[in-house]
Image (cartoon, rainbow, N blue to C red; front, side, top):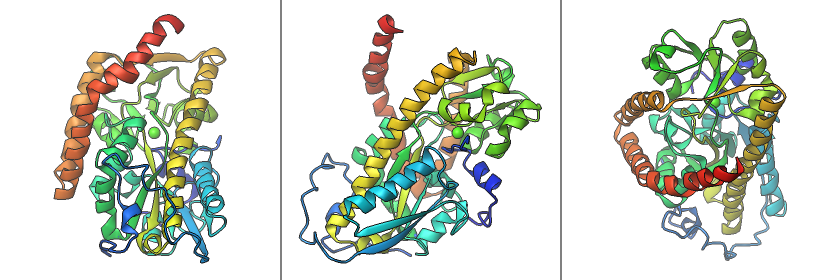
Length: 395
Ligand code: CA
């Protein structure tokens, strides 16, 4: 993105705000490959995701590759940055050292928001970030990270792998010379920290809240003032009253920031980021030139990275939540249904407007929205139903 030049560390942290980051307590139209490569390169949305794992004839090719992975994360950032490191390491190990990936933190090779252009232009073969950072490239990118009242982490994986999402993502990125994969997910985030209770839409009026992206636009339409405070400054801004409220990520990262020392109420659920997908983008020319087995290494290492990050956030968030409540006496608050209904109505308008920007955004939105609609009942009677049942006895 044009504004992505020479970001300072603080600006980088700020840029992460809409999504996943943790401050460590811290596309040239590439066209369709007509080669045999196309078989594993295509998205699996017809129930065939696991049927292409047999070794391809090119397996064992002696050629080796030294690749660079640029990231939007400050180096070694817990959760997201360490997730990118692990993904790069897994590609090295699984390929028997035939692909060596060197990871660069934000600003080391290119600025955080220079990742897309760097991989698109071939300066680096891989990039790790979150697709909504590239809305300046195309509005539809936002659907491949998170949108308010969108899909959960589990549903995002389902949409991408079996609901047509990956094919749309490929279509969106191909003109930029990129091949995208899911390469992580923060799982559902928290609603945020407040020093007053939020009971009705009136409570948003005049509220100065650190909440970037489409979620911030929703807050604006509700009469609040969304601000983008750099991650490293959130605590002070909240403590001094420069802002009234903030969202960040979830218990694990929020605890590390000490946000509980600057705000009284911790609200749930994080309607603005229900399951933020992180991406592994690969220069398409470089990817298409790989032998079949190495393509599979990249693909399945990315899938494993998604699984791993979901597991990590789930485990660490649960533990950190207990700590926040038991040790720090944080007061949890649930947004009430009347409020959520109205916030949801506004969010629906905001997201639908993104769909009006161009034909591809409309196509992506329609797929996404249809998938969401058909998953509501299933989600209700499966995960939600079970969790409710369990809580009757074990909560
Ligand atoms: Ca966030």
